[in-house]
Length: 448
Ligand code: DOR
Ligand code: ZN
Image (cartoon, rainbow, N blue to C red; front, side, top):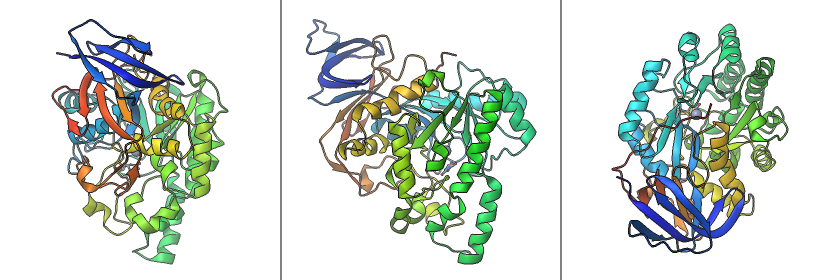
């Protein structure tokens, strides 16, 4: 049974406005959103003083790897969704490179069933496309599944789709959005051979952006965009990492009109190749972190609305795995617990407006995926709500991490803002360091 809340005395950050106000959450939905002060003569309502903190819509992360089934030594839906809600993320979309890979409707539904039992946040799952599961791809229900994921370059899980004919068929016939990982496999192999000659079998992590370089990303994104324009495909390019790829995207249009959209991940706005010396394989991601110039260009593209959303690509691996030598260490790192506060840190540094962060992490994922009744603080919408204390510095030390893998590339980082409360469907699942995990999240549905 839902409890009902009156959250008052906060600063609402929503739909490009910031104003003093409050919310009534009733039966899992936002019942009232008001400006200023109001009192309610209703004993059913639990009062919650927001203490002048920010009240935001919950973050929607369209790109996570929660590792279930099959890779649960790295993370699982229960552990990683706990970390997500502690970080202000109330909905996630999970990738198909699990074990087994999610390539059939039956495997997809198994994941939904797991999440219904275990996830604190709301959830959806991508179906993976491979060289040989076209029938399954075409059966996907657009109203109940977020999208189709295609790996155009190899990464964790060997899900490369390299049959051009299959690719063309999926681009021309997919019933729903196609999310692509763009890295050109032949160029990766060529660069790797050169690096092996120069650096041998145990190179420093800083070779990563030499192997998975700008050309690798541009060639593959260029190809995907060209194909999408040919077939008018609804294409979503994941984890943009270079200045050049941004130029391939449409000029800013209202998001609803775009056929080709782009995502950047927090780490490409936070780190650059200058950090490899300090952090080594811990910041080995696919695509690789590139230069300071790329980092600045990605932020600018976000500000200019060429890039539509910010996600995490949360991809935990164990420290033992990450401590291996360069070629054996897997790519990816956990991020969901720190993504929102990291973006808010960029706000404190004067690099991005607060409203823009909410737009790119909460509103736009809902618009881009046509999610039903989420992503905004609106009456009649699901009560996915986050309270943030803007000026309450803390350090991401090891003891505060909720990731099953127990480490973070953000370890030791000081953040000025702190998530204090997270509501998912009106349930208070995170409260000042404590997780309440009796109520589970819901399956996302889509207006398509
Ligand atoms: O860095 C990455 N990690 N990139 C991917 O494409 C996959 C992900 C993972 O699953 O580990
Ligand atoms: Zn990913």
